[in-house]
Image (cartoon, rainbow over all chains, first blue to last red; front, side, top):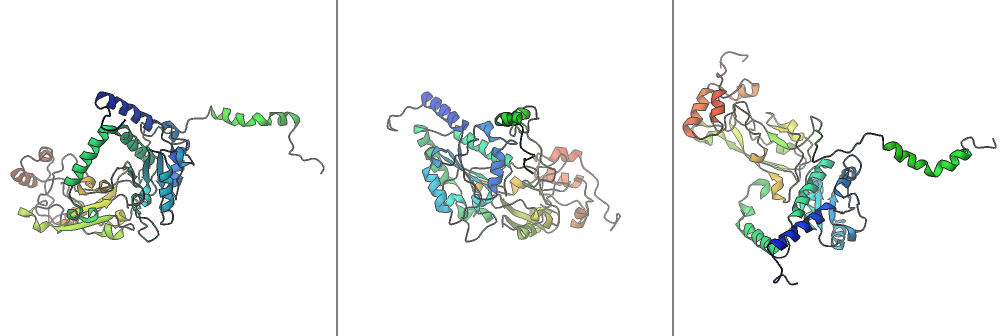
Length: 183
Length: 218
């Protein structure tokens, strides 16, 4: 079915709701611990915080069976191509959670060895600050991501959203007019 | 010694394959350790390093004087401060007591490592940390918190700035903690310029007398 003849309206909304519910209800993360954040990620999976409550207890070693890449820790220049390869091997639909300040922006390691934000390598859906973030923060970020997944648009709705995003980007304040860190 | 004293007897040997289930069974009667996080939040330790907050004096003026010491102390270069002169504000208004105030204040939470060195550096206790840790966001720009995101909300009885300092005082009285609330003169000043200000009514009820400039412990 081409996008031109795709259904819209009530039917699509229902399908969207169902797909969103199904996608968010058992996210399987790919094992991707790079540094100390991984310890907190493991704690989130263990009995005290128990990610199994969200159907997330299976951290997959194979990217082909995973939906979510939790980049936990600093990404060195040498690791960057591997991060990208693992991301490419994951099947669609897929999401990326950048856990901790080092993965999100390089954090306090503003030097030649560390990629200044994993979003230089893969598209990131949600950023999680903290050094390292406590397991509750990770669960909170996952909840935010689940909210995003539930609202993920399909077919015609997706095109409308893309159009709206483009319009918003055109109207946004250009970076050279921003102050300080926002510049 | 011919026989190993630790060798299990025949009954123990027979039960060995199912002994592991005993551990599982015993755990059925232990208390549950799982925290139901988003539904029941277990409070952090009281001095947990969470999101920052920019505090205010009891009369509503900001404590931040734009000195940039927090930005200098920050090991991750996460803080950006730009100071402004209170003298440049019209009609003797002040954002903070003294000469300067923080005109731009930004913390990049994608750099901040929550070490608390900025809190130690702050000379006026303007910057402190809350226990709030729910900070995740979808964009990089959104994780740079600006001054309005960080500023503490007005407590009941505080008067929203900018407005003049308490009459007859200098910044020293503020630093000593001699200011306990807004004075009638400050309320009148704001009522004349911004009659629709939301904090006016509560502040008018909570007015106090200005501290005696010559008395006290100077």
